[in-house]
Length: 261
Image (cartoon, rainbow, N blue to C red; front, side, top):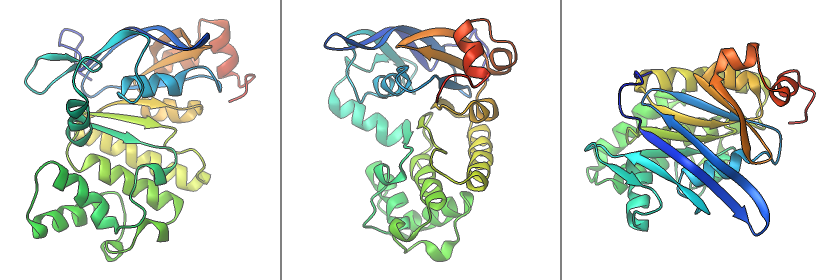
């Protein structure tokens, strides 16, 4: 994790979302640095998924700002940039791993096509180079190269999730958003996927924001943790510190599994 004296990759200030009179989240603020993984945890309805959608430019906030440091070093407000610029960031600098891999994949085209499509979106045109990169990334996420021409609908749930990860990481993004990436998978498949994610995040020095209800996932993948309740942040700190010795009553209940996920 980069030292605090360096400029953050993502700076969030006063982020708020109202749905009419219903609160999505209120006054959320934090800095995220390159190589740092932050987990956002809380029970259902706590606002963690709303927050992820706001941060990733998929939902417009009611107030506050999300400042992203571009590769040239300048800061850009995600919600003051143009829609084409946000789409460009999603093709290059950002990735989004959905809980349901079908939302992050083109189910009707081949696995290699799913990976190659993202490369073509950033300007790759040589078919041989695109296919070789797809082969390399399938191997990296532990998918046999013989399955490169098979569509994702023929894959198991765990394989689809690994393919979604390859599709997201092939363009060397700097920031990954992960929404319950192991949700709905068998325990043994979860363990394998978590080990893969941990290795890739470390190897690529990725910054990541992870939404999860599973505190074991948060402990394994994140450096820092943010606990949300009813749309507000109730506690934040180093992951081990918060999970081993939570200060706030809500965090204590969450850690002791009294609250529902």
